[in-house]
Length: 495
Image (tube, rainbow, N blue to C red):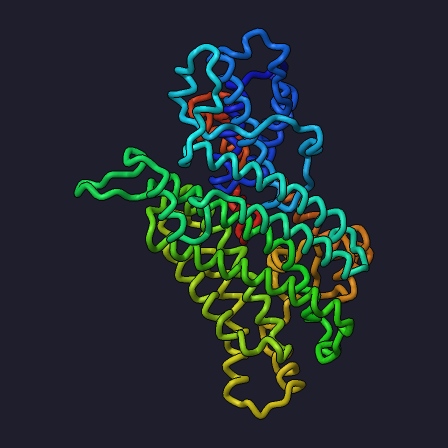
């Protein structure tokens, strides 16, 4: 490890992704960190200077250069995705210090057989190879890097100027829109447009040929295309969902009727943010539901589908909680339909991802009391809004502060500790400020729980090393037995 090598780097990247897909998020995070540090040590983030390389026109040089590019940008978008999934700080180098170019959209066999002095750019294909997805994932990850940096710096710092935050995110959203518009036709959201483009640019040998001779889109490309779409939709959700949370005023029922956003410009910005967020969520739900029902799903694709659709369904759930605003009541049925569609899709995904079952239960936990309350409201339309609010707050399960902290944090970009004895005014504060509100007894219980989780994680890692990586190694014979603990681990879904 002191010297590092491409083989070892590849092993760490694959191992990190494997354990993450096995729902061991912290182990995957640690392997990913090792991979990134090693890649930087090997200088993979820097482009090779061809003018100073005497072998810059040989086929072996072009092949080695392409492998470097693919390895770096594959690692880059894995790391950005993992960081956003877990809500942790970025530890990539500054974008300005990364000058390695994107990999070319070429066939491996042609690069390997490239003749001396031949320009590799003439090998670029008009149709998608397996590296076309890496190109677009890398471009999107650079935009995601900027967006996430802004969210953590401005939104996470409790900046009071709401207009400034919204305007900044709307400006960054224009980068995502520009990215989506610049995608090749075969990567577009419109299925018909994408299929038509593939028929125009791809040779017959590119397609999957069935037994009856019909041509169909290969499984790898269909998933690659949709995953790119799900990723940039997910970034839009993360950018704007906190404003839905802030606009709801859930925790003080006396403020629900107040027009908190009295500024017309602020109202306009808020409406734009909320609509963009919901549209991205709805598009994600529709796309994943269609993918699961019409395409060939496997363990890898089901993992991404489960994560992205769960992140998306939180938006209609949150909007229903906010539906005390009369302007949005007409959309409640649409949101309920989105939720039901998501539950059906998650049930289908259970065959490939056991975590989907837990998420179905979580969605039901969040939505059942809301739907019951909405049904009661429809039965008696004569009840005034104040009575509805009082009834909603009195019904069991409708107080968001009673929900687990992990569930609450999914709605926001800021970590918040919730306790039944903590005043709601702490919701805008970070961990350091909120600690003073937690009674000593609660604090000691929390410390005890953290110690238990830490020991459990150590046992998990030991058990994983023994049973999955080194099953016959005697050094692990006396390893600590894994102690199961229960509860939803939302961090294990993502990216």
